[in-house]
Length: 123
Image (cartoon, one colour):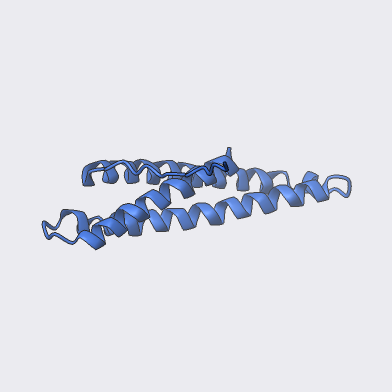
């Protein structure tokens, strides 16, 4: 007899307030990372002469490319969270919009996954 594994997803029922607080926390973390990116960029500019030496150039180029990729992803996530926060009104308007509310929760869950992936890359 062959058995198959079923993967189930558990979506916690989050209140609008919980999702709002979580979104604010995400935005705060991402804005902090944005400041860190500025710090790293400033470091690169400060030490540019050492970084472009022939024996260090390829490593330096790779570091700069990773930093740029991280900055772009961070900016995209910041914008996505701002849009997500603005769409929170769907949950708070007092109108029973089951499909829209379900879609909002699904997008919230998607952001949770995206942020976890970004943090794995960043850290």
